[in-house]
Image (cartoon, rainbow, N blue to C red; front, side, top):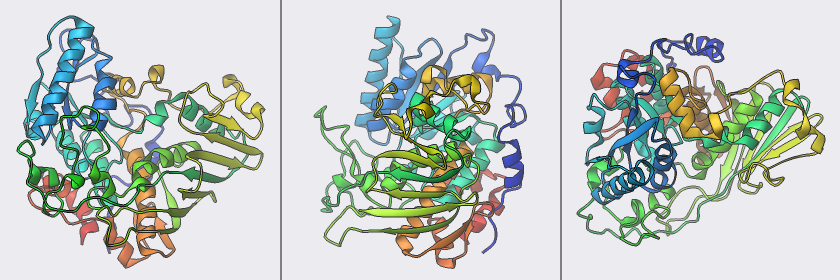
Length: 474
């Protein structure tokens, strides 16, 4: 198998990773459509793509609380019922915060939104198999992007997405919001500054999903464009447990959807939660632009009596070039534990000022004054992940979780998933992005059902790096 290198080498990227926004290739002048004649008060015009659980609970509220900086003016969803609920939520929010009506247009096809010249940016809060394609389309159309994690379903997709976003000089933020949380930032900054001594190992605890689900075919709801929802995946009969709840019950409509438990549309918790905690482990050890060099993983998989087929109990051992061993398991407490020669630091979600969210082998390790920390990590304004993205758009700079770091953290998760599927040790080259195993390399990509798919879009758009990237599909 040939290497899937892009024209911009990985070594060049690593050298530039810590450089300024200008060096990273962003324009030094903010686009007129963003700032315009009224700079810097021009509002960023945003469209929401996908109006389900995460959009409703996190992404729309994240931007709606900044009405003086940005406005959500359009929504799109393959389910018209969800699009309408999204429109109502946004308009009601602006009526309350601005005491005025802001008209929000709904779309059944998000590509109509991307084609609008007045839209500056998009938020993509869709199922995992619908992340890569709209990111590529939005970037090629000159839009800035917020996309939920994981960045992609496959390693090949992730490489394509990162290269397209960089080539188009877009400000992209991934929904790995832990980087914009005080305790995770503090933990990583302490580890990067050697407070626990030389880093030896990392323990990452993640949850699992239960088996089950109803596979019985059902009529497709009138509100749902089911073929479009399936996207680049194979066409199969509709059942509610494959997609999302179809109900007018406000307590259930945004409940946990069935697609989160099917390998066709996600890889399970190893990427669902893993992309959060692996991102933090990479940030803490300074590996956010590289990745592991070996994996040894195993997992339990549901039997044929279960419709939902993502992994059950699992463990993965990732080895990095610096000698650090990262262990990922559902049997570890949910969070990240950095273990060094001089102690350990543990961090998880929860209130930033809670001892349960951040603690160490010795409390003194957490009390090191900021002035003594020579290596500083990016700090999101007001610990606000969406505001960090909005500022990146206006200043034309990298957001705290850009496309390449998102690709790298997701790659470590997908390398683990492939190891779990094959059940044998594998070596991984983070520079060439290849395994030492032909069967594993064939799992770097998935077939795309025409006309959908990120690679199909890139090919039709004539993206200049496509030929070098498509070698991963050979």
